[in-house]
Amino acid sequence: MEYGPWSGPGSTRVLPPDLEAIEGIAKLFGTTQGQVRAMVAADWYGVHPNELSARALRLIPAIDGLSEEDATRIEDLIQRLSAQ
Image (cartoon, rainbow, N blue to C red; front, side, top):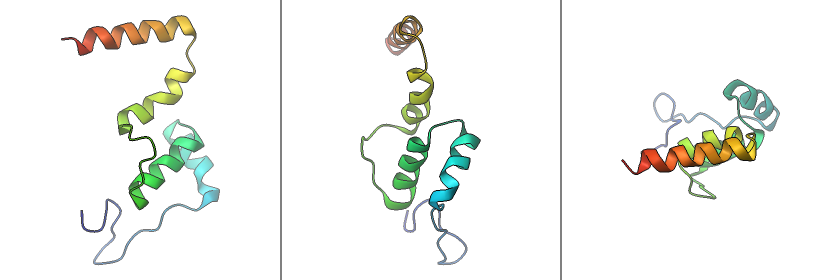
């Protein structure tokens, strides 16, 4: 896109959120502040530090909160579904 995903009307561009807003945005999306910072870096500045997909970035906090047993189950399920 010529102006990125956050272009406003005409040639006006929407600014990234202030640092003070990061915590609230993380709560709104049910994710971590680090993930919100990564989203801002990707959307406004085109910086993708780890080149993970948006889907993977959304799942990271939930997966990291699982027990080892549950994480193993999820990994097995993903492997089984991706083999189809």
